[in-house]
Image 1 (cartoon, helix red, strand yellow):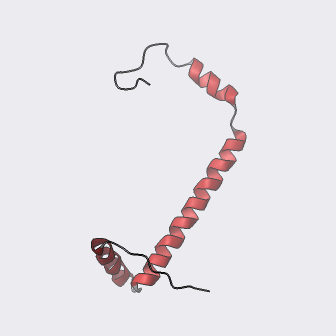
Image 2: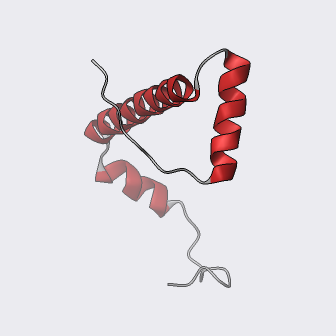
Length: 80
């Protein structure tokens, strides 16, 4: 099921969308829907990846990594 929505776009962006859509043989609306669907899919995969990685994380491994870092002042510009 699709619903019609209006999203204002800067004119230059709309021109680019129209160009890409034409090259793909799609309408601007179809191309935007395709691109947005792909972006949402990637965002979901990324979230799932980091959520899964977080379940395996431990403070122990972070502490071990930090113990290997040299004990010196931060580089100029890296101070807190």
